[in-house]
Image 1 (tube, rainbow, N blue to C red):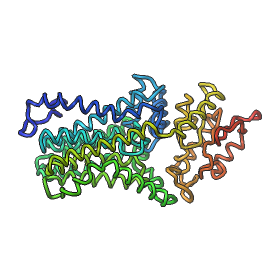
Image 2 (image 1 turned 90 degrees about the vertical axis):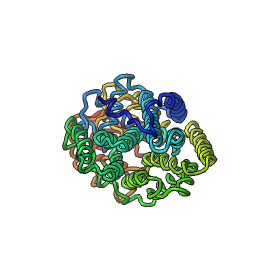
Image 3 (image 1 turned 135 degrees about the vertical axis):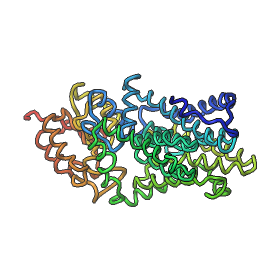
Image 4 (image 1 turned 135 degrees about the horizontal axis):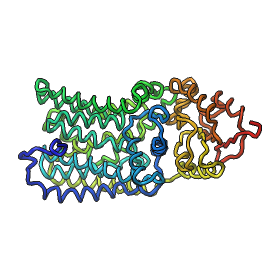
Length: 486
């Protein structure tokens, strides 16, 4: 039944006897997907998001409950995916989820190729798939190579457009829901999908209703199997202070401009044909303009402009460039592919040679934590690098895996929006209960001069003074063990 739902219809532009086409294209796309993701396998972790997901997955496997004893501001799909990968291949490395990330990028490329082929022919299909994979690495490697939320969101967004293009509104809704459940901003693809539904005159035929049902039912199901109130709070209503420029305006602006410049350089082969040829009213591409426009809105909505936010722009940009290249001389296609390939090679070299300062610090700190505690001990790492728990193989003493949830520190934000009063609503009451019920054997202050250090967090300072003593320092991170008098 599912195969029948997803099978492309027989049409002039997408013929039934196309096995030869896909037999040629799929191996090429698979090889390119593997090559572009090669740097991701060269280090244990790329960024704190991977560390956060790895710790979450371990806690879930040990009986933790999402949005109750395991919390994050993200929907549940990717933590579940990590948990499943760890159940099959073990939690000692992220190789299993890195392999899944390769599959996610390949699936995204295949869906874009199929969508482009249906609209503009065989050559366009190959162009879309190849262009997407070439630009998929076009950000800081910590953003492009990490197996995190956006990477697993992208195939769902592409599937939503694929299904909508074929007027399969129920399936399109399911894909939109999948994108939202991977990361909230994935729901932005609903904008071009709804436009396609309305422009196809499907309102009276019930298409809009099927689309809505397809979106709502999986989201409500995810809420029901976790904790409905917790799901609503952590994914929608509980991030008001986080989604703000206050206290970090210049830092955020600089980051946004920098990542925009990096992405522009990576898309040097795509942007010129788009600007030269296309307009929203020409060549039937209005929905393809809505897609990147909605995605750009989602990037801005986060108010932080982290590089991985920009990954959402890449599938629609690749499709727009493919549409533009159909109206240009063939040599422009060759130039676009060659330029994109050269840019891709530069970003791959960056990924292979990128420094590992934060990872090296987390490893040394984890080694010290492991040496000073027993496997059954609980540990509190007061910082923004939850991967320390995973590397040390120690269980967190709190459901709040980073100090950011308790102080609103994130991405360089400085005062005045950092401190206890800006924490997630109700977090400090829960944190105090956790510390009273199961005091950690070791506390690691990894703030290293950041504005969320104990000297600026009175509750943490009092907690340490009441029962802990300093026992060591690792590259600026201060370790506290329970005092003998306790």
